Image (cartoon, rainbow, N blue to C red; front, side, top):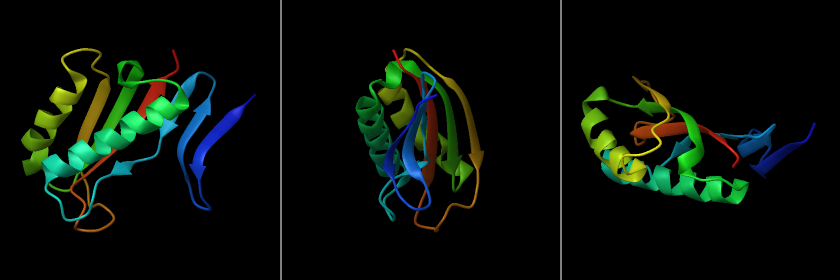
Length: 115
């Protein structure tokens, strides 16, 4: 059983690869940016981590999206839909939570398959 950890620190890894799956830690954008900008930044980070792990967004299985305020649902979805490009939609849940600081508007957690 092989477990590979990417960008590990004392508290967490940004990605863990095991048994054909890639588990990403929650990704956040730049604090203080609006929801659309944070969503773009998060999805860029997700693309980079998935590429490093040897996969891409077409292999995303699940997404959990946390918003600081559900009134940002539309703004986040607009960027999300552009990113997906109308294909390979994962199973997804979106909810409102109190994030680490009030400057964060969105956090996205992804699980993807390796090709």
